[in-house]
Length: 421
Image 1 (cartoon, rainbow, N blue to C red):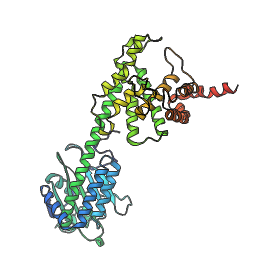
Image 2: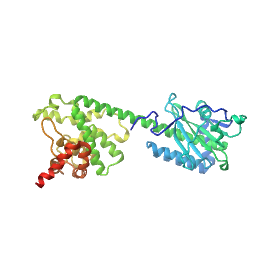
Image 3: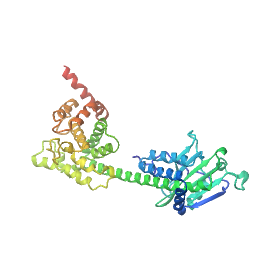
Image 4: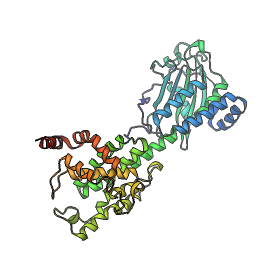
């Protein structure tokens, strides 16, 4: 996930440059935020259609709670369903009191991409007082001094978005066509209910994104620590991640499964930080004692990764990363057999061996990709997962070109010619 200036990861319009309106619009009705609970009960009790609409809103925002684009689409759609005479809809929010207010939803019912202006006077009042307001064109005494923003409106309703730490934004519905009528105080009550759910949904999204950023920062720090220990191992992990993802995509993995595969592959050799430098970088063959020490890196990997607080979907990352040396026949470090080894770990195992074979080391030259594949084929069903090896065969051309570059691509091209000769 990329970082943004806002807690919400969307294309937002900065509203900090809004100029105050030249005339204070007349507020025809307002409702304190603390009364929203009473309003919700009243609305649900007296209007079955509204009750059904709100229950659907709660359900769909819950289902889309961590999917930003989907959540914003749900909110925009329900706004026009809940207020059928509204022509325009805006939601603006800010991460904290010192951050600029930014638009996160800006929609015209016509879907023509029309910009939806906001009145800074109204926005400031709603943010300051925490009141939902209803206002209409031509109800004040300002006459020709009425602001351009307000002159475009027939009527509008605005409510604050509130969360655990107070008000962090506004939601506004406009009517800009006289033929569509005007909002009423009943609409104002309806908006307070709607805004309460929208506020909860957006705050949850913000917290989720904040947790994701914190998790990604942790991963970045771990990768950096591995780079300090041995840059070659860190580069190997990066390549194994890319090869693993290519295999996983070929095997039909998607969504959370691909995210788990990505993180586990990137961190699979993190435990090599627990191996002595003279063993880790030894140019020749390892002794039996040194081999035992090297084999402990998988356990070290799990021990380190078990210390991280993972998002719920990624809780199995430590086990998958640690199992990257498990063999199908159960002769790996943890003795796990066949399908009991998670698929992601079986994929990483194939990618790990392939990268080790086609990459040059101080103690060995790089093998041509064809020879590396032949070695993997020889261990199918015994050492490595047959489906993962087959998937690597299918994508190896793109893998070599995209990850290992021209030199490896040339070595791959030379092999068939030698056979043909």
